Length: 248
Image 1 (cartoon, helix red, strand yellow):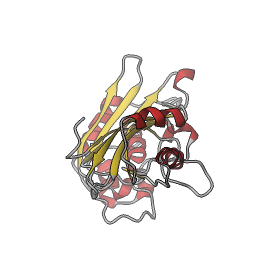
Image 2 (cartoon, rainbow, N blue to C red; image 1 turned 90 degrees about the vertical axis):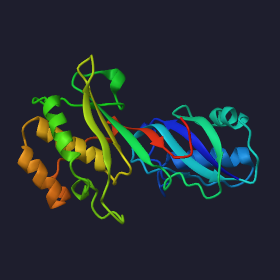
Image 3 (cartoon, rainbow, N blue to C red; image 1 turned 45 degrees about the horizontal axis):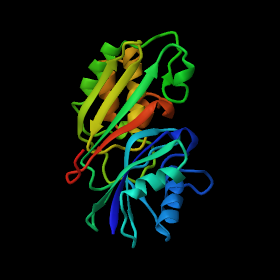
């Protein structure tokens, strides 16, 4: 039997989703809990690979088991999982269903605030530099980025991917009532470090460090070293995964 499991987690205490040889990961904790409940070794496969410190409000993983599971699994699983990982629901799917390859769209948010706030520590990027970026300018930059589909310039170097083409359907900044900012971005797929590199580049655009021509040249040159610095991981959230055969 193959199941999809919908999760949410706070990534602060983990070195990302994927199992690491010498560091704790969300996948490792989940697999141990599932193996305990199913009474057999269970190995999950996630819809993507979030980096250390990145959070997920919506995350799917699939796993196989000989055991027929009931909805009691969610209650039991949440009883075992630590407080910073939560199981939302599980769904029986076809044996060939794949949490990573079948996803048709992924959405991220990046949170950034400008006034020191202990309640946002590790959950939002505290931008405490003298020059505050203009979010309207950053939205202009986001519109420019959406004109392109090759994002090699925003990809972590030396990654093994078959293509750097991604189809963006959303990229915009939203001003919050407290003066903080949220960046929304959706695409069919993302490259490693892509969102954090885009945000860093748009911040450069928002403070006037680069202009429109330079932004376009960065994208066309496909050189990661020309784009902006990657922003900290703690402000990044995976917020939505869509599948053609799963209803919200």
